[in-house]
Length: 175
Image (cartoon, rainbow, N blue to C red; front, side, top):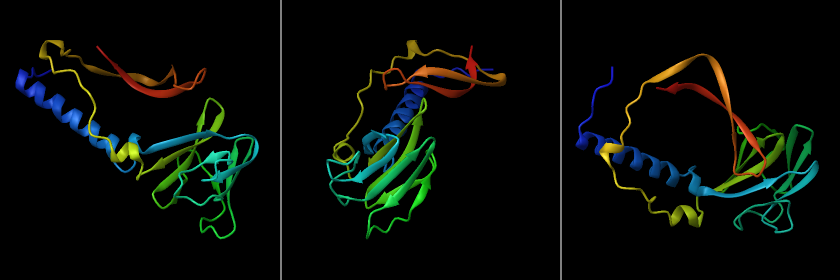
C-alpha cells in the first residue's frame, strides 16, 4: 500500500534526494574527481604524468610511475625504480592504487580493459557548486510499486563508449 505524500512532503523528499546526489558527486571519490580514462593495449603500458605515457596521470604524479602489463584478461602493475607502490596484479574495480590525491584502477567494458583515473584535488571537484534541476512539480509525481523479479536478471544497455554495451543486474521493475 502506498501512502500519499502531500506537495510539501514531496518537495522536501526531492530536495533531500538532490542534496544527497550533489554531495556524492562532489565527494572525495565522486564523479567530479574523474580526470581520465585510458584503454590498455596488449603488453606494456607506461603510466605516469609524462604525456608520452599510454596512461597519463595528473602532473602531481611522477613522470614515470611504472607500467601496467596486460596479458589477455590479466593486468599487473610494475613500479618504476624508487616508486613505493608494490608490484601487484590489478583486480577489476577492486585494486585501487593511490599516489597523493590521485587514485587509479582497472575497469573492463565489453572485453576491453582500461584505467580510470580520479583526483580528489581536481579542478572539476573544486569548482563544482551544484547541478541544474527543473523546478519540483508535484503533478508530475508518479506513484508505483516495486516488484522484484522471481529470478535474477540482467539488462544490456549502451554506454558512452561508442559500440560498447554493458550488462547490469536488475532487481525488479515498477508497476
